[in-house]
Image (cartoon, rainbow, N blue to C red; front, top):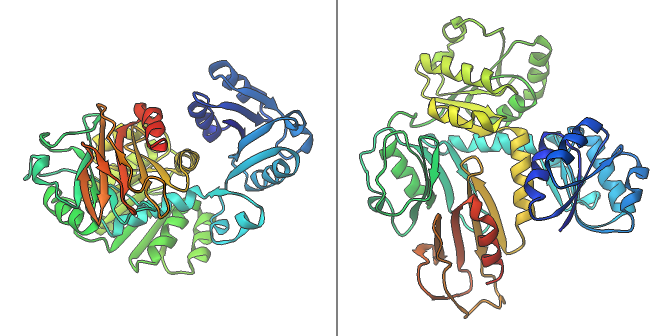
Length: 439
């Protein structure tokens, strides 16, 4: 595909690095140094210019493009560049990143003829919100084709050691992270203490397994402390207010405290504190929180806040993970790592590019694992067709029929409403994508 990326910042660079392996990439930015670094390390076409200036797009007028992606840190620039691209160049699909959570509730995307909009702060907040329903879990992923979920869980007491004793007609184990190594397990694999295990299937059955495999995490979450009244901290607090839990926000900037109080309409306790000394855990009773969340843009600060909470025996600590280099350290320290806004934007855009009306793509375990899901809709030419599985190491294939998860290890005749699901290590992404797309 021919793809234009507007913005060569952190998100734009990561997208260009990933997409340039398979696609032709043009990337626009007014920062010459950023473009120079990009072109030195990646096979891309750099375009120097202001994405808000129509003249910048003149060199692209005679070409046809599949996707235009606007991912700068400025919402207004992203919106304007998308409008200009829509007017000046021939582009089939437009994807935009928007920081302001207000846009997620508006119809701006439809009004501007934008195909896909990504709201990274909303995505990050919703990811943490789901922990209320799964207090034992580290992360939860939903799917549009199935009510089943993918839940990651840190094992603290492996009373059940063999995967074969966990799986059923409604849940399967599809990945394990162990001592920095991620792998796709077989049924004979034995679980170990501190494993981060990925379980796919029925919500109720997964919750029952979580109760057995993790005794340390709280059984329910009623009291939450959030370090940081930044945009993300406020957005997290907003989604938790819907769950009617007690919220305390700790922030050292007095102006941010005032803004948080106004945004949350005094429904959360805002504490203005430097939070350098541990005394805040005693003085403000933070030590009795069921979950502490640190929302700084600095991963080291987030790790320190979570370690402090652990010293006071807070059972669940969550750190926003902005830099993938800190992902493994967070897991090693028993801290739940949740994608930060930029990482959320990056993966969300990749998944939108890799998905279609019949196929969805998702990433898990810090991008080391990928999921493909294809549903057989009414009038699909695949109904009644016999297909055979793609047998490949580092992958697991299943099909869901009538709510039952079945191993896809032999030929099957497809029926309406069947769902084919593949879990794999991400280096196989291209091969699996071609296979499932060409069934």
